[in-house]
Image 1 (tube, rainbow over the protein chains, first blue to last red):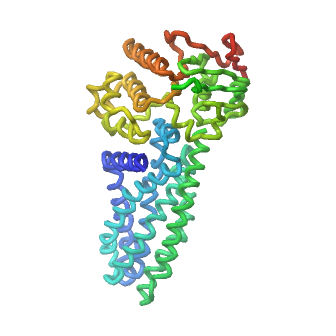
Image 2: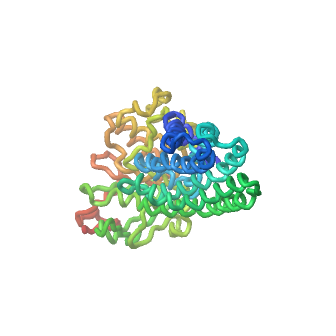
Image 3: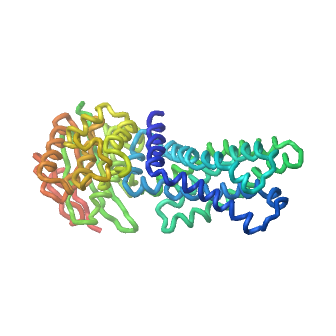
Length: 221
Length: 219
């Protein structure tokens, strides 16, 4: 387990040293979301109705931004060889990368989400459920994103390819996330949607590290 | 280390992108022995080292370590070897010490990182960001990684590249000590490394050193 935390600590330290990455993700999230009021015109009712959906979709897009560098640095400087030969299994290497992605992308997005909600005239009653839904959605985004990053690693224009591979997989997660929010908006219980999201999170947690390790092993050959 | 520390390669073949780099490669290395890989660029020296590290699957043949096929106990074999690739695995944003500390934590180092840095002459650079290291210093960092934990097998891909005279002496000295402690070293090099009692394996030319060390066939 020491090796796992060593890798996580190093990746977080690298992220903070570069600093700019997490900031860019949050700024993109806010700036892209803030385009909508301008594009749709000043209709507070319309915005209020779609605000939660915009926040959710922008979170999905923003979480793509730093994915293409998730493994690329370690591939380019030979660190991936060292990781593959270390006592840490490639499954746990992948999981550490996913956790660091969530901590540097998912978590900052959660913090920034209320601000975007404010810009989009999100009804006050929906803030708690939006944050709860995002809390369940972002881990799944990071896990699927990590899988996409491992699969497209080493490919030419991997970043673009990654978006094409991963965005379709984000759709069910966004549907469930929005399902929870709209249930509350209509005065119903969001429990079933949240439970399904949690089930997806756990299923991805079990399957994705294994698939990432397969992809990385192929690549190192 | 016991006499059972024996690395045997039998009939190893390696294919890269449809090209057969070498085949019918045989060698036996006992504790304290070293194998020097020579050959022109692209002859498969790096591929052989990656194959021996277990990063690359062999097209054919068998690799035996301590009397067991390495495929039977990959984790055990992996923990007995150290691989120094031609890349240095340094993060320019981190300090030299932080870089080495990471690898130390990862492999479960038994030697303090400060000692390993001091041994390769990087002690004064410990608090520098790694981006300020010269090419030779980066190579020394690679040598420091080998020293974090004593392991019986060293696989070194061009360890002397970019090293100055004192760096080359350092590399030779480390390899000699490793062998004196019963370690095995397999080294690829273009330089004339003055290694004593080393067997040379020439790849990619159809030539091979005499004795039990078989040759590598060209593609």
